[in-house]
Image 1 (spheres, one colour):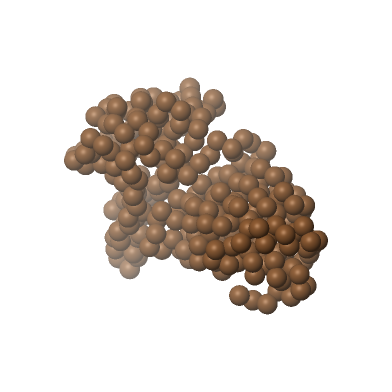
Image 2: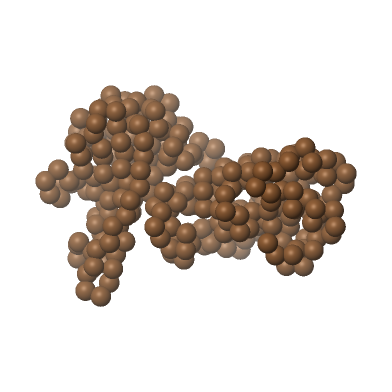
Length: 298
C-alpha cells in the first residue's frame, strides 16, 4: 500500500479500514476521536479513495462507505473521485454497491468530472484490464456505467441492480424492445438475433439483456418510455413459468484473418433443465458488423 501521509490519526484510520477483517468499533471510535475524513493527501487522494485502491476484495466497501457518509465525509465534493477509485479496485459486486451509496448520498461535480468518470468506466481499457477472462466482471462494469450515467443525467437509478437479484425469480413474460420494425430475427437453426433489449420479467423485477451482451436487473419491469415499443417474444415461450437458478458467464475466441475477437457469453440456467445462451458473434459476420443472438439449450 502506498504511504499516503495524511496525518498520524488519519493513517491509522486508513490501516484499520484496509484490514482484511476491519474492526468497525475501532474505526468508529477513531472517527469519534476527531479524525479529519476530508483530509487530502499529497497525491490528491482522500482517505476513502485510498481505502478502495488496490484492494483484492471489496466486501468491506459498502459498510465502510456508509460509515464515512454517516460521519461527516463530504460526499458531494469527493464522491465522484471515490467512484473513480472503485473502478480501479477490487472488480467485484461490492464496487457497484458502494458506488450506489455514494451517488445516493449526493456525489456530484461539473461536466468535466462526470465525463472523466464515465470515460474511466466505459473505455475499452477498463474492460480489457480487468475483464479479459471474467465476463461476470464486465457486466458489473456495465451496470456501474448505467447508474453513473443516469445519476449524471438526473434520471432515476435506484431501481438498477446486479443480475444476481433475479436468481430465484419465476419468469412471467418475455418482451423485446426495439427501435426498428423487426426486433427478433431468425439467423439459423434455433438462433434468433435481437438488436436492442430483451426484458425477462418476473412479478416484481426484470432481467435486462442488452447488446454485446450485457445483463443487469431492475425492480421496475417496464420503463414507461419503452413500453409502447415492447412486444412478446414467442420464440422463448418454452421458458415461461420456469425459475432462474443461476446465471453464468463464459467467453470464446474467434479468429478472422489477423484479428482475434473475444466473444462474451451469458447463460441463464433454469429449473426446467433448459439454458438460454446469449452471445455476440464477433468475427462470424461481415467486417464492422456483429449480431447479438439467443438460443435455447436443453
